[in-house]
Image (tube, helix red, strand yellow):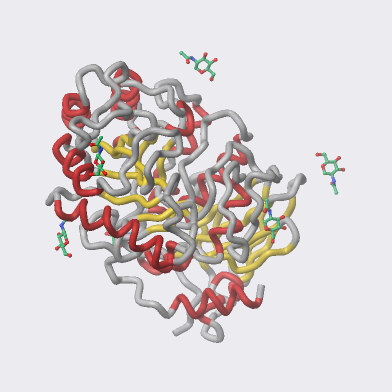
Length: 417
Ligand SMILES: *[C@@H]1O[C@H](CO)[C@@H](O)[C@H](O)[C@H]1NC(C)=O
Ligand SMILES: *[C@@H]1O[C@H](CO)[C@@H](O)[C@H](O)[C@H]1NC(C)=O
Ligand SMILES: *[C@@H]1O[C@H](CO)[C@@H](O)[C@H](O)[C@H]1NC(C)=O
Ligand SMILES: *[C@@H]1O[C@H](CO)[C@@H](O)[C@H](O)[C@H]1NC(C)=O
Ligand SMILES: *[C@@H]1O[C@H](CO)[C@@H](O)[C@H](O)[C@H]1NC(C)=O
Ligand SMILES: *[C@@H]1O[C@H](CO)[C@@H](O)[C@H](O)[C@H]1NC(C)=O
């Protein structure tokens, strides 16, 4: 815990206003929807069009979800003239461009997927060695976003330089198309992309793939921290949160830590667990890519993914990810600065029983010590209940549900100078 305080305070000194990548995109974390978590390889043009229409008609678009990302398994497994990628003609009978045009006409943007390897993770043709050709093809279809995976990378990883060089080829190729294309690296945290990707990409994955489960240990996701190098997959929500806290402060405007696509609405977690999942993705400034069936959402799913006040924390103009201030057994406490001298505080209870949790003003404004006025009385608003809880001084104590969070906003600061 002491080490993480030191790490976080050293990182807090880094300039946060530096725009990471050169394409001017993802000033705040990108938002949208991706096919993979719900549908895997079972995608086609109709499914994607239906999802895009639902994103508009349900109101999701108005909340900021504007990228429709087509993940793996869209490809025909043969290049035209050994060059140009083509979509699978049975899934995309009109080709890609007409679909992209239709989605653009709805006021949404479109994303595509490939791997910095010879094959994608689903075993389809990928882009290593074909970066310029593929970037040009996607630009000609009107693509606005690339998710770029790490499978079959021919051993070109293991050092930050090998990974950087391989991912930089695509970064340059995208730039050369002249079309602004958001570049989302997906190398599962291998070789520490938070240290090498900020000048070439708009976001980088931190861990193995998410699994729709709150905290189940899984042999496929063997690591709990970044001291361990195996990326794995089937990583639980708590596993990913625990990994993310150590590098949270590496995020900045234009370059974000990607905790992976959301599972809210897919059925593997309770309502409180999904609320916790969404809260932490928002507060740590992960991209918010929905992964559920947006054509058929329950009221509970909508309540989570359409909370404008929680989304506002993710999209806040201070661009500061929340910092984990302490861990006590199953309890964790986070604090993050927001615009206008306000502050978000999260009390997280990973335990199996409801509990009371307390955060003191010294916990919340730890980095301002000793210039903290503990007697300062501050209005506190609950962002999930959407109501003000009243004024507090010195500390706040709240009931926190099992496998749940309380997420509150302090409408002022206790910093005394
Ligand atoms: C390409 O990079 C240059 C600077 O390196 C930047 O000015 C330009 O906007 C970029 N273009 C695109 C399309 O990303
Ligand atoms: C396809 O192109 C690659 C790279 O340009 C080349 O190495 C390969 O020999 C070509 N294959 C055929 C069948 O032409
Ligand atoms: C998350 O981290 C906490 C504190 O180190 C630990 O108690 C807990 O077991 C971890 N949970 C998972 C799922 O890794
Ligand atoms: C919609 O979701 C409900 C569960 O919430 C399910 O029972 C129903 O079959 C779904 N309908 C469709 C058309 O997928
Ligand atoms: C900050 O305050 C300004 C001026 O009152 C207001 O326009 C802006 O919306 C506020 N921003 C946030 C994130 O609350
Ligand atoms: C925690 O909750 C479980 C049921 O979920 C219950 O059996 C147990 O007694 C509770 N423990 C405490 C300390 O309240």
